[in-house]
Image (cartoon, rainbow, N blue to C red; front, side):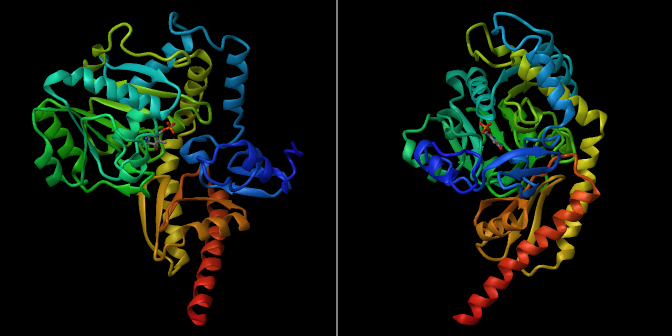
Length: 408
Ligand SMILES: *Cc1c(COP(=O)(O)O)cnc(C)c1O
């Protein structure tokens, strides 16, 4: 093993010792603070990905550090044979923020996929043999475990792992497609309010309201996957709230832990009562360490007004991108601080590489989209710096395209 903080040799170790599932790691990061990351050479990066919408408070936020340290020194794990104050506190907080009303219930897992697995099982309990159908959207992403892969609307991701769990059908994201597909044999409709992994794709106007109306009419559950959109990311606590609907369940993960692994299924109405003893569970799920940290993160988002900040900074970032006037930018999608920048050419990977060169971390969910999901804590300084660095990254790639065009 070589010096693991040496920026020239870590790739050899990664290539030899890690599975290839994540592809080539782009950088080796050794430290973070606020909206910034540092590599082993001491180069600083502005982090406009935040671990894929995870580091809501940025890196090494004092509230996060204090919560991890305090709870680790108090009680980290006891199993779900027992209750702990942090898991009860977080459940009450999630119910309040999601607006479930008194009947709402919370199931804890450790990731988004686990939250969606729980939701899948809830849908089966609700549906029983009379309702074998589960609807989901084409191009959706709900996770990579076998259950959540079946929900995920990307045939190319499923193909190597077939046969899939039966019963899931994928629809075009249109009200017409949903109207045509739904009937009384549907147990649940799963959807993301904004399809993050697909390239930050918004649902058509009125889709969530129509989905609520149609599922209610046919006795199917509406399950909203808020794993990427939740915890204030879109300028609302949860993105469904903008549509003024009440779902039957939502799933959350990513941003609620601020970097500590946690996921949860939050139910509305009485549907959470379908779980009976032994029907589902997780050894780690809802442990006092994870739940104490998530409570502290959510409390800080609330105290510091970061949901409002996400809305305001989201507008500011959009305006700044538009003001760059780059011929590469064709459109800006998403809500709040979950932003998709559409590109005129399939050069997203090149833009990411150029951004990294300039000291900006961004992400390419597909060939012609840049995804931005900075910490919710960003202010004027970070927005200014982002606009400068992103402008330079776009210009680097645009210049290369022009050169290529001249040559051919
Ligand atoms: C990230 C994500 C998941 C999966 O979460 P993991 O924690 O990676 O298992 C599911 N749904 C959506 C919308 C996501 O963005």
